[in-house]
Length: 214
Ligand SMILES: O=C(NC/C=C/[C@H]1O[C@@H](n2cnc3c(NCCO)ncnc32)[C@H](O)[C@@H]1O)c1cc(-c2ccc(F)cc2)cc(O)c1O
Ligand SMILES: [Mg+2]
Image (cartoon, rainbow, N blue to C red; front, side, top):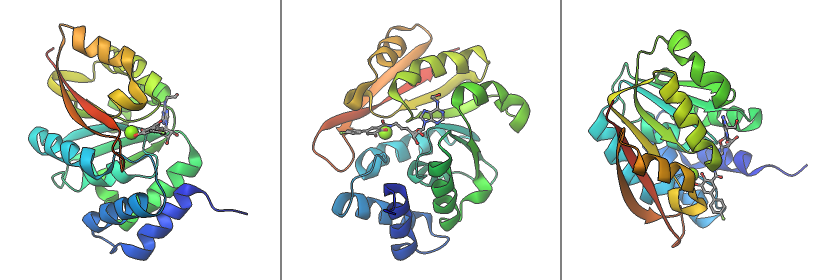
């Protein structure tokens, strides 16, 4: 039977990237998605903005919502200090299986906890399961209509501290209008839009960075 897009993306990593070299994994996926088969990774252009936010925050604890094939997981983990932790939630078992192999190929297993499950079920468990007091950075890249409910759940679970950063992909395309309205109008956030383009295309898209003010 025909392979799936994530399987073909993993094949490109195993063919073109060097084991243990996260940058070569990121480059192999970008090359594949730009020249062979598009896939919904944050990509190289928005990825540079993601890199700058990760470097600025220098997080000890990161939560990613929506692992997919693990592109942004590897992109973030490669910048984290040795004992930092990236928790990434993915509820599709087929995508999770591919992402585990991409993360392993990049040699990032030590820094990444991939949890196979839904954000709504797992966000309330993060403190106890992972001994996390607060999240320094949250990267939202899952179903766009879930950005707002999950942000409210993260707040309710007391997972944010003064200075915690939310970074959301696709706030223009496909768009997350309710989320944007919330973080831009709330007194509890200082929000900033980083204009860019939809991965591997000329379509406008961007990332919204929102600092929790406590
Ligand atoms: O739709 C997009 N992303 C969704 C990602 C979903 C991934 O996250 C997983 N996931 C979803 N909800 C949850 C959940 N919790 C919520 C449910 O309980 N808990 C755990 N995991 C979850 C899915 O299983 C996937 O692995 C997108 C589209 C375009 C796009 C642009 C232009 C086009 F023409 C077409 C597409 C570009 C992008 O950058 C995009 O991110
Ligand atoms: Mg996205």
